[in-house]
Image (cartoon, rainbow, N blue to C red; front, side):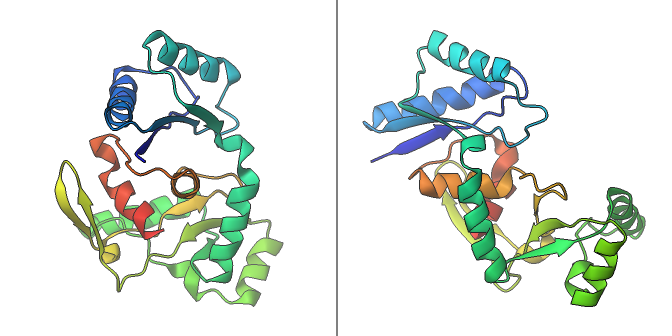
Length: 216
């Protein structure tokens, strides 16, 4: 069965681009007798509001794009934690201790050399004693997903055709902040698998994210 999803963040109101994405997902599911899901990506607890969530639902109802099922990511944190621990045990995520200012300095140095702003994986060289010393200073790690540089990412896009990304040309994506909160990338991939999503229809600006999430 075809399963699509519309996954806005309730940090604001829907705009025309959001509506267009919702419409395409709804139409694809209905055309094929499938299911259309609404997933509120509300991992940003500080900026997400119930008022915005209610407005999103109301807008979809007014447009006659009502979902077959609605879920919230904030209700699924336990699932993300389990999957994160599995990735950690497998060595696919790693802690990083650079501050935002230190990372920005690295990017500026690379830009000055005419190089792309790819993270240098310096945190992988840290030993247990190094990490303990940094945490004793009060630093808390953010976490990155370790891309496999030996495995190019391939997929067939129904609109763009065959796609390919070279992981060596990408930074290992940050998936968790130092305060323990989740960024978009990993929860979205976990949910798409867990909810049986068969087709992800989204904006052109998510092409790279698609490859990264397939890698995850």
